[in-house]
Image (cartoon, rainbow, N blue to C red; front, side):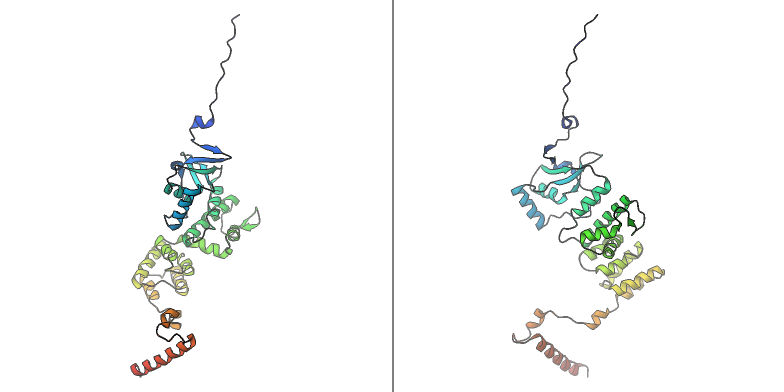
Length: 302
């Protein structure tokens, strides 16, 4: 009977060696190469090389990344950043090759909620950033609850999606709905909201216009050098609903003198103080101005 050969022991390699993950793990925190970290799809928050980014980069150079980012595996390779886009950019500016992260197994909707929540409390968010963040989180919560219509109840906790978002971010449910609505504005109009050229509440009304009408609105604003008041935006929305909103109508409405411009002329104190003695009070300056205007009117109009 032939003798049996002894089995040769098999040396199993670690998973990292088999799959080449190139990670260094320390208490659940991995050091991942910067080049393997990819941005979250449709990430609504801007990453700017501004003064605050410079300060963050200097802090990372001195102390390292104090709070690890959050990532998840990508099907196409590498990792998708869920939280930590600004930290990644700061690491690049600091000349680091790797960044500490925590790898999580997340669904698309879970990742979206974490991405929004980790950024929404930041100071100095643009209105458009907040709007698209609310929209992404709203859609994620809605899908998770299996709902199809805005405002339906989340049966997991008895609250509407807009209520959940509002409670977290300090806005009313109605205000959350307004933010979500302005994501329907075309980029040139959104830019005017972000830079303060156009008010938020008129912008909400303009979001109901058709995309072609919104582009015409951009042209009308450029032509008249005016942006709509709330009442003007509401009138244009009604004209749009009736199918009667044209470029000419927009230009005519924007060319009107706004009621508040008729009622008030405002001067800052620093503009007036240089014309009066230092001892003059605001009330005395007001009386003097009215007297001067009366004299000017008598000599020019009467």
